[in-house]
Length: 222
Ligand code: T5A
Image (cartoon, rainbow, N blue to C red; front, top):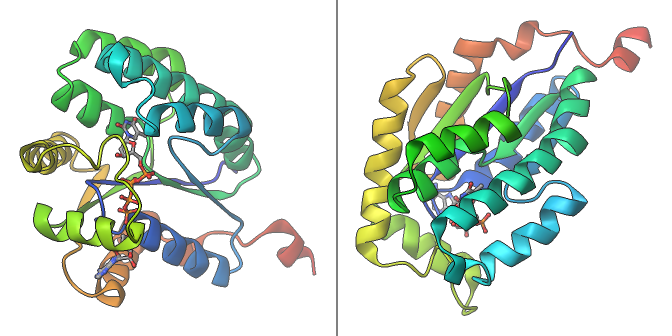
């Protein structure tokens, strides 16, 4: 049986990485096979492209080229990491996926929607997440958290954008979530980590029922 595919989305410092780890651990504690991964990156080829993108080296080429690079990284990530895990029946938890390109390059970068869709068709095909959790916090809180985590290092290519950019980003995610209410769940991530984790667990339980999923084959056999 194909595994489940859950993606985390949202602006900078909203707590995606923190909550992706917590969800993966919780699913593992049920005996489920889990692959925790991220974008850009998640496979050796995609991690190289990640460095090019987040260092800002691709910024001078413009958002269209950045969108192509994100799609190229995603193509490698899907083929090398995501599909093999799903085909092995695992739960794949991915920190960002194609919705990030829709929002960052499509809405904020003003890249033509037809171009974004064409890139998605080539890189993602018919792979759609079973559930996408959008972590939502006021921009000032998210940027403060991201700065705290960075501990004095320079902000990356996208963190370094103006406050207005991050404000538009938040609005774009909330608008996107409304277009596919069955796939998206918007989570208030301004509350303490444990509370956010509980709300995420409630959403995962309500939609995907992990407690009823078969455990790993080796566990069933033993
Ligand atoms: N991008 C990506 C695109 O433009 N297009 C694309 O197609 C894709 C895939 C990736 C960048 O690339 C862009 C978007 C991004 O700008 P990244 O380094 O992977 O960059 O970083 P982000 O995904 O933006 O994630 P961040 O690392 O900024 O933040 P997270 O993962 O949302 O937050 P997290 O968990 O690291 O937490 C940040 C800090 O806050 C604390 C944590 O302990 C940590 O210190 N924290 C909380 N504190 C208080 N209360 C809570 N509830 C907290 N939750 C976390």
